[in-house]
Image (cartoon, rainbow, N blue to C red; front, side, top):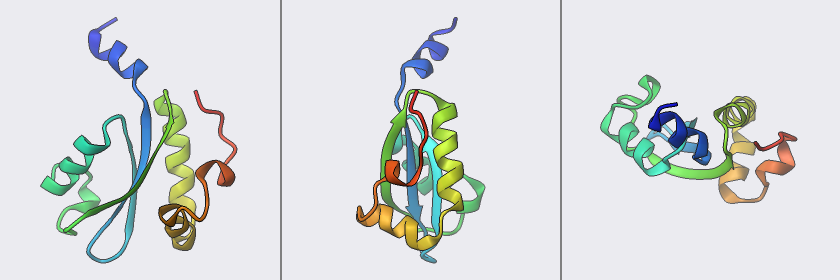
Amino acid sequence: MTSEHVKSSCSIWYVYLIRTRFNSLYCGITTDVSRRYLQHCQGSGAKSLKGKGPLTLEWFEAVGKSRSTASKYEYRIKKLSKTLKENLIQKTVVLDELFDIEKT
């Protein structure tokens, strides 16, 4: 087992929302929110965010120790209405109230 594999299997995964200058929200997952946000701001992150800056990290939350769990949250958040995503950002709704996903 490589040291990178050990590191990733012990990491906490996060789901996050980034706002573009057009007021759209982008959802992603990562084990390092600061690093990933910086990548997006520098244009080396997701292609869908290139040229849409300035970008603002609006919200993030730890969702477990597996990429699989984080991906399930990401998939479901992407399907939410913009109003519900804004509610997550404003903390008027809690992520675990929206979805019943077992954190691993």
